Amino acid sequence: MKTVQCIAIISLILVVIADSSTSLPTAKVFAHLGENVTLPCRLLHKDSGAFGDVGIRVKWTKKDSDEEEDVLLSMGFHKKTYGSFEDRVHLLQQDSEDASLVIDDVTFDDVGKYHCEVINGMKDTVQEVILALKGSEALGVVFPYSPPLGRYNLNFKSAVMTCKDQGALVASYEQLYNAWRGGLDWCNAGWLNDGTVQYPITKPREPCGGVKNGPGLRNYGRRDKKSLFDVFCFAPAVNGHVYWLEQPERLSFYEAVQACLDDGAEIANVGQIFAAWKIDRFDRCDAGWLADGSVRYPITRPRRNCSPTEAAVRFVGFPEKMQKSFGVYCYKNQ
Image (cartoon, rainbow, N blue to C red; front, side, top):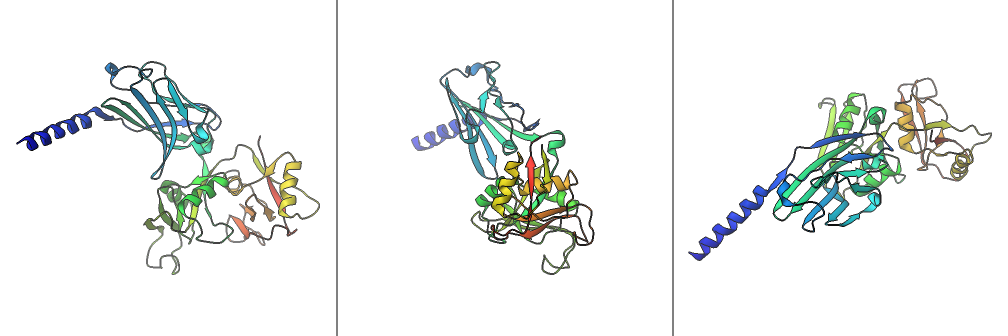
């Protein structure tokens, strides 16, 4: 009999805890790169005290696929920020129920999904907020990427870092789908930010899912994150400009890096050359070094000897870095 009573009491406690947790509808906030932005979050239980009270805990995290990054933790008057957010975020606290997060100097890496969790005893408020770019900065381009080692050499973690190194993020399903609708056709499977592996086909053919399957996204589904594939990256519109640096002689990779620095710029990365090609219609029929050690050139007007059949960022390869056979593309902030 006592056992039954204990089970009943435990069940009642669990119901109370479940009923005290409130999840709010997802909010979406838009920001320009470089500006400050506020992500909203409020404590709904006004009778439970204020954020200065020791008993209230506020935790902000950033969610990427199934991985979680700590942003800010507040307990009473003690607050801690983490990683790339350190000394760049704080709570707004316009009143005693306000747990909104202020992010200073928004970067492309800040874009994504955030969770705000406010806990006071058995009362729990959860708010999900999506931070997105607005205006022309919301424009961008999806591009496939293979590392210098060759195709299918990136696990999920290295795929995330690879895109970041190219001034980009791992693309979402929606971004890849829109790129496919815009004509992107690529036969190598790559990671997306939800942990799935997919690739876009506009021209069905035997080595790429077969001729019987129609055009669309070929989906391998969610894969073990230690598996090796390529990656699809998404790069935003560039704030500055990408340009071909006129030089009297061809350069090695190291000379190319220095030449851009001497011109008050930096060597362009792959995301920047794709964004300049797609959004700014940058067209140049000269092969040039980029920051990852690859050699590419952007063609928006297909013509003989310069990508005769399609507009594309043409890929020459990853030559030996001492080879003096190419020019360089530089990037300068405006």
